[in-house]
Length: 334
Figure 1 (cartoon, rainbow, N blue to C red):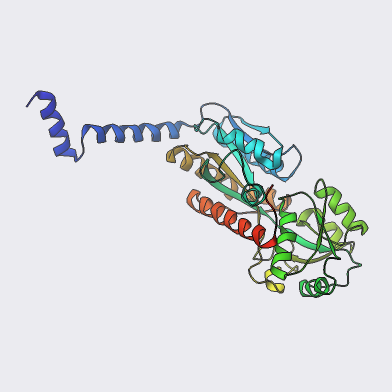
Figure 2: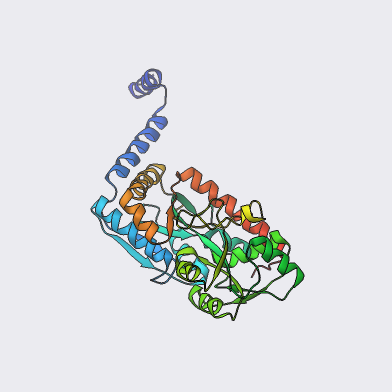
């Protein structure tokens, strides 16, 4: 036996693994060391929407706080279009080095139910980092609608099948899917009226051009309190801390009803576990700070942190749910 062979055997005997095993361990140690130094240059955070919306606001708040924590600039890069597919595709194809991240929202899990094909796999092509926050959506009616509760609205819709209209602020949005799920679970038939954005749909709902809709709670709160709109229920399983007197739709006649307009951070799929954990820990620290939570509350969002494994499981379960809902509602994939 040669010297090298004896040394290899000794290493295997004393430490329990071969030269190849040692290489793997050293590689993992190197990856961990790299993660500990991360970031050493600016990080790009891709937002799949134009500036000014909720996703953009969340990204800029989180980006500013991560810039302070890391001492490296977080560059917000807006890549809107194709119902978020343009931004998501760009991130999916990016280098898995931690320097390109993605601010995803509920569209990421709704789109598979609406489109036959996408230029990426919403699960396999991404690494889940952390959920950040949820936006409360509220089911609304114009005051002219003789319905004071969710049960009232269901009864009314059943008596006027195909007559009541629902403002849809955009295919795949949380507000749109609120109407889709409501129709499916309540077994009613409504007419969906499409709009190009939440603003125009809310304006027409206030004006009475449409009679039913859904909107983010904060954007509609002033109209609820002034009596221009009537809130029937929030779409989350728990009442919102922002307006706890509004019941949930689930407790108001449709058990299990839940639509979550969530926001979270994803990365390209091959990102190392060490970097996933490194980025997650910093995001969790930022979101967990009381001052930052108050900023989220002011934006109409409720902080909602989750570990990478939990976030990944949530994404898979949401995709399964919306595929099932779309199928039951008879929505044809484009």
